[in-house]
Structures are given as structure tokens and as C-alpha cells.
Image (cartoon, rainbow, N blue to C red; front, top):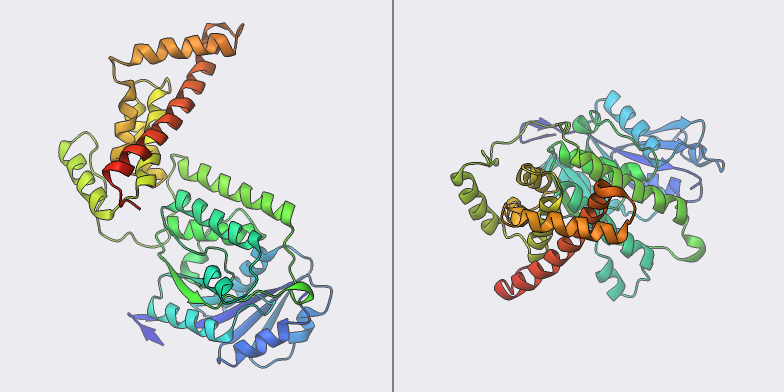
Length: 385
């Protein structure tokens, strides 16, 4: 099928690990849509792979041992790419995804072939209809949404749904670090960094209860893995070396020469038009205050710009915050840092006392700046999101 000049060929990838009681029904439902299916048996011990063997239009890829969902998805993507498919819709093997929603994701991929499609489960609406949604799932969704905004500047209501449509061209170029559940977090961030747009597609929210629900999620270990991947992705975003570009850059606005007035004037205009929320503006200001109070003299403004751009914060607000250390005020912060350090780290020496005191003062003033900015913006922009 040709859409926007691109030939779109879609298959379905189903990673499975010990879902022998549900995987065949999932595959049969998907096969009813007429799409080829690749089932990746990730070292199952209950015959999950064998349950789908011999089905028409279904290929079973077996991994000798359990390597994790991310590794299984990678194996499925490699199979799909090698067989000429341009896109892969991923479907969980536990039966929580409806065939109608698989069709919706595939249709969205055909309409927007260069974008990543994520299923969007409206948990609140499902709860209002009487469905029991685990509190852990809602908290995890909200936490993942926050982290993705920090990492990419993109606000996606549901980043945790396993029902997705991946454009395989960019995916096959991604150099990933992780291979279990954390892969699904990493791949979204890296695709966004690479210029791939992300689109949410509403899908039905289905949760099984009791014995019906088969989950291999380990609350402690997998939560720790989730924290690890998000922290490392943020740190990677802050590193000064270039981010891997996966698709050609679209022409559009780019922040110009920071020392020119015209650059700042245009940045302010664009910030107002783009509707930064009060929370985003306050966070940018607080970050600028923190950077401005560090002893990186003559570099604070440059670093405030760098961190604001890397963290997708408002550059103007960050630079304003960094001006807390302008020359008339700088001696005050130096003396205060040294004095606080002498109290907290007595006996650490002059340099040690200053470093400790400076860290305390920077964090404290950044927190105060955040609260002050929220208060001022709440009055000045009561309708700020």
C-alpha cells in the first residue's frame, strides 16, 4: 500500500514468555486481520511457541533462554526487517489487546508512516465504567509520562502500553542499552531524540483480575530497572556529545546566536505563542538559579542555555534565573557559601567548606526560586497550565 509516497508493509510481532494459555487466541484474532505474525518465544517453558507452530501466516522465532521482552522485540523486528516489512505492530501475548485496536494502530501507521504510534489507554474512563485498574499501573503511567517529558520535551498520556506500531527503518538504527521491560522506555526516548514523531492512538483499556491475569512483572527488580533507565537517559541527554539522528531534520525554528538581542526577542515571542505552562517556566527559572549559583563563573549563562535546551525547558526563563550571580551580587553568594560551609563542614578546609556551602546554598535558593516563580506566575498568569 502506498501512502504519502511510502510503501507501507505491516506485520505483527508478539513476544511471548509462558503465556501458553492465551497466545494462540491472540494470534488467531490478529490473523483475522490478514496480517503476517511473528511470535517470538522468549525461552518459554510451557509450550507457548509450540501453541502457534504450524499456523498459516505465522512464524515462530525461538530464543533458547529467557532474555527479556526487549530482546524478544528486537528479534521480532530483525525478522520483520529481513522479510521486507516497513512497520511492526507489537501485541502482548496475555490477551489484553483487542484485534480492533491492532487494526487502528496499523491504519494510523499507514496514514503517518514516519511516526511511532503508541496505544493510549484511558484508565480513568475505564475506571468510571467499573473496571478495576491497579493503582500501581496508574502511578507507573504518570511517572513514565513525567520522565519522558524531561527526556524529550514530548508529553504523551500513556507511554507504557505494549500495543505500538514501530517504523522499522529508524528502529533498526537505534543503538539501545537495555533488553528487558526497560527497552520499551528507552526506545521511545531514542526515537524521539532521533526526530521521530510520536502519536497517541486511543485503544480499549482491558485489565484482568485474579487468576486471569498472567504477568511476569517483578515489582521490586523491574521498578529499579525503570528508575535506572530513566536516570541514565536523563544523564545521556545532558551529555554534550551529539544525539543520534534517525530521520532528516525538518526545516523550522532553531535557537540562533545567543548573544544577539534578536535571538532573545524571537525566543520570547515563540515561548509565549507555544504556551509554556507555569510549572515549566518555574522549573526553568529554578534550574537557572541553581546553575547561576554554582562557582562556574563566566559560564553560568552558557550552561543555563545548554541545560534548558537539553531538558526542553524555556531558555529565556532559565537565563533570567542564572542572572542571580551578576557581579554586584556574586560576592554575597561567595561569602554566604563559605559561611554555610564552615558551619556544616567544619574542619574541611577553606576550599572544602566553600564547595559544601555552595551546594547547599544553590539547592536552597533554587527551591526558593521555584516556589517564588510559581507564586508570581500564578498571579500573573492564572490560566497558565
